[in-house]
Amino acid sequence: MIEDIDNDVFVRLQTDLLVVGDSIMTDRHHASNGNYEADDPQNQIGGIIPAFPLSGWLRHGMEEIVHQYDGTACHPGEATANFMKSDVYERDLDAGYHEKGACTDDPKEDDGCVVFDLFGGFGGVPGKVMRRPIKFNPVRYSIDYTRGEAEGHYRRLNRNIVSRNREDNRDPLRNAEVDAVANLDGCWHLSFREMKPEFIGLLAESIDFLDTHKTDFMYQLGGARNFGAGIVNCHLINPLYKERELKRVFDRGKSNTSKMDEKDDQWAAEYRPAFVDTLEERIEEEP
Ligand SMILES: [Zn+2]
Image 1 (cartoon, protein in one colour):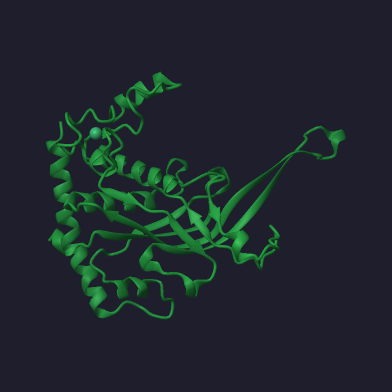
Image 2: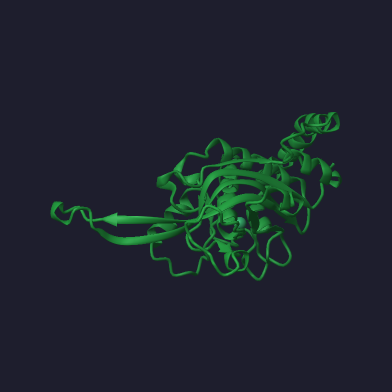
């Protein structure tokens, strides 16, 4: 069954507003021909959303699913790190985490827990899922969804923090600029270096979890969450789809073919439950 799943899997992400601090990389210099004006709505700026915040968000969702199946997950921080809040780290270990890498005697030989297997990060092991950045672009026809791209509109937002003293007449105390992407809709491309059924089971469950909990502060993505940023609608695009079917998902003028509907039924009735069962078995076997 797992042989039917390609090593490249896509997650659809849609969000009204995404803020990832100063880490959006834009191509504004090159796209604007040297006359970039930050507040010109005509700017046709594309850029890259780095994989770090996306990866942390996904990992958090996956850890939660592991907990729901009564497993523990690798803590994302090195056990030997000098944590500023060591009491918090200890509390994490009591709340469903084990020390990073404690699940494997030899990280080059055994796979450890499923979170370690996927994310690695210990003993020079990279993990079996490669999380790619998302390239975004405001011009829809130039977006290649099969390469993990998205439609998105870059804006630089200004925030003024004003004085609260009446006599200051709301004088700005400080001005902060943040990079944001508005109306993001596209694909996040995940490549598995090695495919296992439990990986897809965990991915499917955690993406559903993140979608259901999208307005929980803990499961929003990126910064500015208090201001409604990072509320992400997400779903795993049927891994049984072929490339042209994936493209069709994003074509507003077209609906599912009957072949796609058939694959959706197969996915829901056979593949997904089988992969989730394997996940459950693996978590049960873990120490
Ligand atoms: Zn582990």
